[in-house]
Length: 160
Image (cartoon, rainbow, N blue to C red; front, side, top):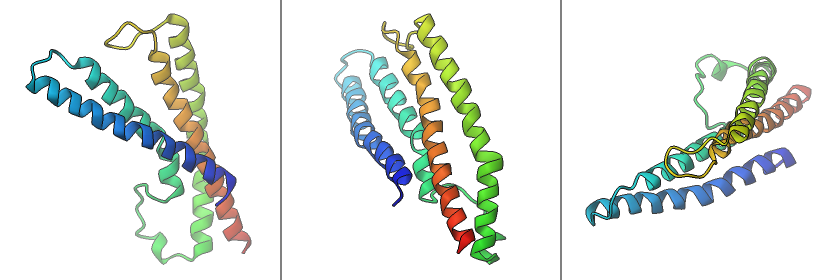
């Protein structure tokens, strides 16, 4: 496994190992709170939603590396491996890399503005909305790293 692929995989697996158990705990807390009439569980629901958002945003790169994304392979199944690699490389360069760049630029700007304004989460009093917004450029960065790794794989296939 290439170093870039290992980095993307480790980051995503670390987040998933933290987020999934925490989401389960929040879900159990919401259910128990409702049945034991402990009061509103809006904070737990919000934390669960934020953890889910983090998991989704930071998993796109991993899914792309593992070829686990949605793909329509009606024509490409019949193509030779080199043709598929050329198409994948063109898609990485023309679509995915520019898309990641836009997400990085605007996501980072949005997170910075949220930080400067002290924007707060929906429930709670902490000015941490910028952390949520920062997940978008972080996810885009992991996806961009995965794009570079897949592009290198395609170049290797084209040279073979």
